[in-house]
Length: 375
Image (cartoon, rainbow, N blue to C red; front, side):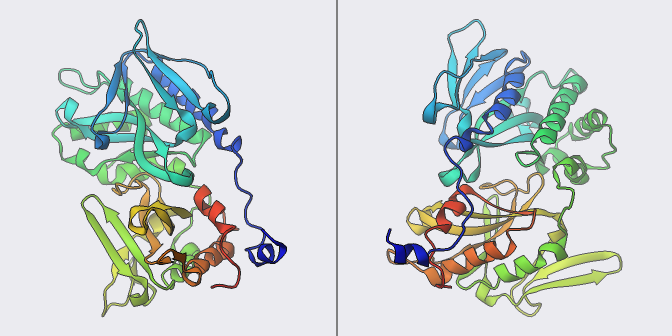
């Protein structure tokens, strides 16, 4: 890179993480997994059903210490106690932990308790894919719920989220409320957490309060960022749920509007007489700028601004991704359209000082390649 080229690049980008930094979270994930592995009432499942196969180690397992260095520093071996059966897992590729309540076919579609160690995607981006899962066994007795098992699961969630609130979240699947044992299970969860849970719809909000930062942004705090995001050219506001994806072209969205009816405040994106949507903006706890390869762009980088919530919201790609703003055509043939990409980087520079704004490693790395003055 010559001097003139260097002077044209965006100044003072955040310092990318080194390879050593990428393993900084391994001790946390190792401590959490070690506790679950040593529990004889737990099954460890490796793999994702979406890939067509899952391996299970039933009963107590041992997590062997690190044996390698370099890029294999996070690799550990989980071995079934008293057996040669084992699985290798790379904790250096885990990005976060989800404590999940969801109906399980193995339990006759009754609510189950899982702990999912989610794998990182390209550039360290977060995905919803489980590399490893700890499944709580013996959850039900003949006519009740095993309160001790529920309490153990919840107390470990509380400890993990207290240690790393940015890397742990609790997800309660909406399907759990419709099963016959749902009410009994909810009562056991209320006793374990020692808080009143009036119903399944409120349980996630109550139980995930520990995940929210001390200064949780309300709609007005990040409203300016959202308005700037939907003002981006050739982009879409995207709402992704299981089997459903909705896109609103930003060029057709008039803005963000607040409506108050009595004590209820709602937020509308888009003009009333045009295509618009209503979103619970006060549920958003953070905003993340992301850049990762996607199939719709020929596996090249696309640039996305994620609006995230505590817990899950049903997004199969990213469980905490309430909605996002992403570019439609960041490339013209094989050439990046810097006039479209540049404003996303400008938006990050404008808001990055706020505690509720962050960027993934892919976005941080991409910043150095975005020319200044192209937006």
